[in-house]
Image (tube, rainbow, N blue to C red; front, side):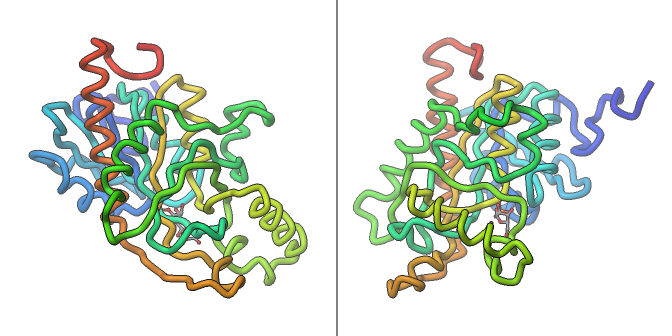
Length: 270
Ligand SMILES: O=P(O)(O)O[C@H]1O[C@H](CO)[C@@H](O)[C@H]1O
Ligand SMILES: O=c1cc[nH]c(=O)[nH]1
């Protein structure tokens, strides 16, 4: 008998009765309650380490919200333990720093894939395998972003490749690092390739999802874009996740309804 054989998952302190099969993930534990307020009849489930979980309902289906903490290792643990509890569909709601000049502070970014600048994904996938988001999740997020962003005074949304990395300050203060040359050249190459924005969990989350045959996608708010100010463009700072949360919630409803219509239990192998 090991500590891992208990009914409750070792880190998240949840079991399969505590969570729905559909889960919204987010980095910040304090964002979980705010997201859960968008579910019907949401209730608190567990709070251990960086992992806070609430459960409620969308369109009558049980849906959970769980925080992953910052970075790939803890995000991978969250997805692993949720999959062990039967979860098969994940949408990450996150924040990021814009890279492509078209991305303004407050814009939404829906990744099709994440550059694997994390360490965790290398313990899951071969090094040349892409950390791609699940297409049906991307499609559902695009449908909801179309509705949220069309005709609104607010910000645009973008779909494409993003960067995941392990060091926040390696992104924001690369010039202070002994490896500044490497970091700055790499960032510039990503920018030239059209990489949209930079965050810290998608590559690991998508990689675990691929390895475990479940679906994962993300909607990320770019809270600023230093490339814009460097290039003489206006750089607005907007750290408001309201639209990303709405986009994720609406997309989850689309996925739930789609699974019901197709008479599948959801998930990749359904
Ligand atoms: O807002 P969250 O989801 O935490 O995402 C971003 O914010 C954190 C860094 O400030 C990293 O976790 C990064 O991925
Ligand atoms: O610039 C940013 C902002 C949020 N999160 C990141 O990882 N980078």
